[in-house]
Amino acid sequence: MKILVLNYEYPPLGGGGGVVAANIAESYVNSGHEVIVVTSGIASVSFYENRKNLEIYRLPVFRQSFAVGKIYQMFFYILFALPMISFLIFRRKINFIHLHFLLPTGVLGYFAKKVFGIPYIVTLHGGDVPSHFPEATSKFFKYFIPLANLIIRNSEKCVAVSESLYQLAVNDFKAQKEKITWIDNGVTVHKNHKVKFSQPLNFIFVGRLSKEKNILPIIKLLSATKYNFKFDVLGDGEQMLEMAQFLQNKKEERIRLHGWIDSEKISVFLESTHFMIMNSKMEGLSLAALEAMSYGIPIISSDCEGMKKIIVEGKNGFLFRNEKEFEEILKNIFNPNFKTKYSQMRNDTFGIVKEKYNIQDKAKLYLNILK
Image (cartoon, rainbow, N blue to C red; front, side, top):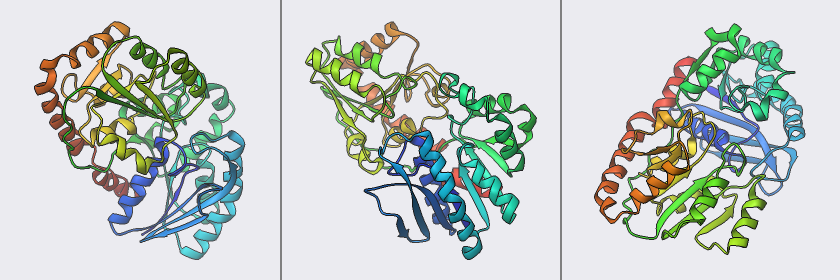
């Protein structure tokens, strides 16, 4: 089967939604299918890439940042993708389209269905569901709810990446609830790396430096402690400058801002990490957390929707609801007697991701819809 994958972000551009698209696309290829990806480009990355049964076209959208895209760049992606996908459907005999993000990418699926009769599915990642993070998206979606409903109605299925996101989507798009389902995010399962439990403890954060991810308060809390640790912050975003200024003023050397790191290079950090720290206000099903878990890394996270499903308290991580609970977790893991417990947590963490979040298993569920 020839599958066309459409997403305005795809590695090395963007965040978790792009990585999910890439993971599923590669799983399709591993299952014997031919995949063509049409995504956004950036000046330093080639327009065309050809791997075995996986082709990638990166369209010029005047993008300047690997981390963050602008609304006008999404508009240019749609504008340039319309003729590109028309050409590919005509010349390459596409059987099915897999879209990522209801808007803006869903517009392309609706066009292909109406003009060429090509069926499509849509994966919802969070930013395309109005109530997932209303502070950021409610004003935008107010004008596009009718279009979003039209795209869902004409799809084969609209797939949320977690059960909690599914519940939000069903509530936001009540008229289309029969079209909406969910398949949990998945990741490639890596080797269970054995990391010596000794100080300094290595912490990591991977993601956008935004109000939604809310990692700045964690930086301030950790900086106020005297614990022996290193905290690698991988990502870029609107709060980067504020974080850098804070660390400079405090002369804090334990916390390092690395900026945006190519997803393929993040593994170098994960192989020596003891814990991932997250403080999101809301998550769908965090790909960054699952990636860390695939290396055996337990997660310390805010008790938000999405993370509650991933983390089994004391088994593959810890959840906190406030500053005091976060400090109690730190006190616990810096206790010398925690060493034996930590070794078991790594084994449990790796076992959970292998059993529940293997990307090959998730890709099979998508293929069942495509068939």
